[in-house]
Amino acid sequence: MWVLKLYRHSLFLALFALIFSAYVAAPVSAQTAPPKDRTQLPPPDPILPDEERPETPDPDSLPEDLPDDTTDDDGVSDFIAPDILKQPDYSRMSSEAERRARLDKLFVRLANAANEDQGELIAEEIWALWLDSGSASVNFVLRRGAAAQTNGDMKLARAMYDHTLDLMPDYAEGWARSSRLALEEKNLSRALTEAAHALTLEPRHFYALWTMGNVFEQLGRNEEALEAYREANKLHPKLKSVEDRVNALRSSLEGDVL
Image (cartoon, rainbow, N blue to C red; front, top):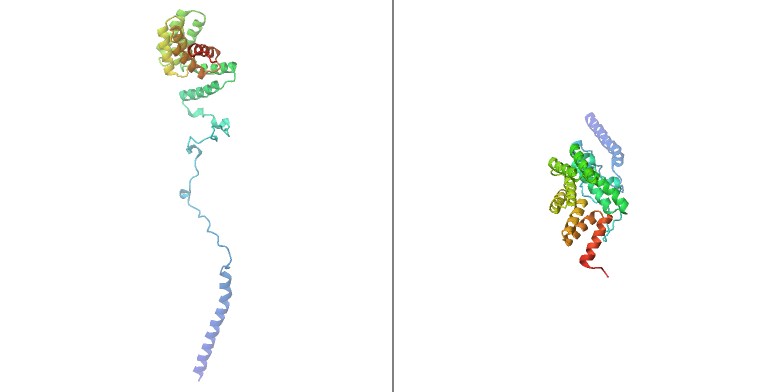
């Protein structure tokens, strides 16, 4: 009999424990379950190790040919980048590359000079670069020849120019000066040959083009003279002496425009 009572008592305790545990667990599960109307956000971006993070582009690695202005269909630029963005970094260039870059900028300015005076000032800057051969001794000999030529001492000028070309055969200014002297010496063949050689080394040498035009005129080859003058005029539009010869020869060859 006592065994049955003990069994009933144990069964009652087990049933009571089961009901109590279910009652306690219900609020907890209700609190942890997310509300049905809550918006689900995407998980945050993972924090990657340094070696897996995407690299920030280096400005120096960007393409060099990115446009620095926008242009309409008619070719007119709407935006001009500040000059500081267009300035070449001369510190990273060799001396010859820097010289070419400076000449390029000067020739752009020369082609857009407002008047003859401004053009002459820019031309003087170009000549300063042309006169610098990179050798102090060559520079001295050439300048001594130029001074002698100005003073009318043709013999000394010829000796100095010949010595310049012996010292530096690839020096365009030496050939241009020697060509001009040959023209004054009435040696037209040498003048033409040396002007052409100067232009091989420096195609934009408007002084050599001027000399070549003078030689062609003296030889009666006016069409070739006009072509040489026109090329010089493209480079130095405000040089009146060249412009005058272009107009004179064009009128002679093509006739006056009515």
